[in-house]
Amino acid sequence: MAPRPTVAAAREHYWDNPPPPPKVEPVLQTLNVWSALAFIVGTSAGFGFVGMLLGVAIAGFIPTYYREIFGAVNDPSFEPYAVGLGLGLTQGIFCGLVSGSVVLISVAIASRRR
Image: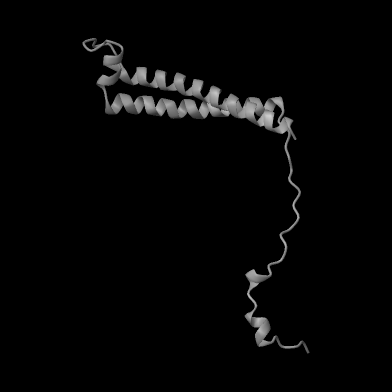
């Protein structure tokens, strides 16, 4: 028959003497050309999509913004939605390329020092 725990043992809190954390070896993945290229394409696509949504939102909520920027206030053939979509997409892709490249360069420099 197992001995009953005493009152003193019941008063010991778990956080006073926690078990040691498990030993986990970090798995470092190497950065190869294909994963870097996929990261840059992914950030470009994501930023392009967000930029496209912002450009269309600007054209929808402030319809005269693009007309005044491009000097087409009285031009009936000017389409602010198309301009907002195109500008947002191209600027978003450019921002995605730049930010993805900066992240990859910083990761490459940090992993080179290890």
